[in-house]
Length: 280
DNA sequence: AAACATGACAACCGCGAGAGA
DNA sequence: CTCTCTCGCGGTTGTCATGTT
Image 1 (tube, rainbow, N blue to C red):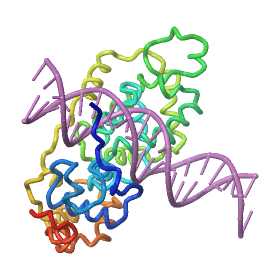
Image 2 (image 1 turned 90 degrees about the vertical axis):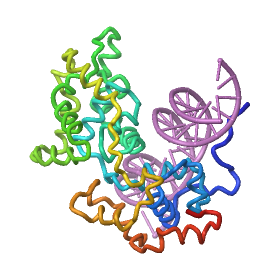
Image 3 (image 1 turned 180 degrees about the vertical axis):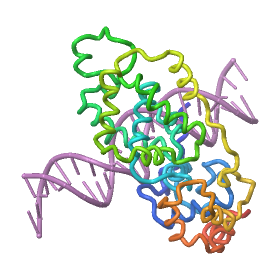
Image 4 (image 1 turned 60 degrees about the vertical axis):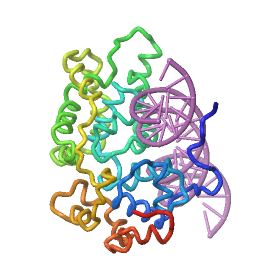
């Protein structure tokens, strides 16, 4: 019967988002949440498909996102999780607060993959490349598995305990003396110790945790469609002492650039003016 | 300075899962 | 149970920035 396209190809804008579009989407979601993504562009006055809106929001506009390169510690976690989960980027991202699956996927493809290959590690199997060529009858444990019971476990524990904390930065700060290269070393090596069977108990526990859903906090204002969140409240959150996201995020700057402090942008009047059908 | 190569990341596409009618 | 719809995921492509020749 065929799948209905997610949106009409005609009349739907594609390509990079403009600041104006971002502003519309942000103001709409902050004040209304997202009911169903399919309806968002229409209600927000955007000539985009809902899918595009969702992607833009989750990967770029969401206020709890960290920006910038993954830290060494985060990279390490990604590698370890990838060894266990494979390309399940969303699961991996769920364990890295403030990071998106797309971001991690991109980072993997552009950085980590090459790094592992350079170190002689198959980025798919996480086994040594030369070992792989010599014999396929090797240990079923991945190369980085052993690491995961040591360094990575520490990181993942911290993540679990404080999902909103910027643990990676703390880890880095605590280990500031280590040069950038050291991250490479920790990845590869576990070195001699990495190719050993790790405790299956630890493995199971970690995998179990990995597969758990992150408990929703439930207080994200942009998730509350009916809430009609006051943007002033939101901005006070953003500027307050208890930032739910990294205060240095570019998003905040963008937010200010968009002039969202201006209530005229968020009280629905702007949206209504651009889309007469949308009323709240 | 121009052309080309490479890197980085935003965005798109197609598919599958799950929910609801 | 089947069908339809929406959402989310993972793979891939496109575009811009930066580096190199």
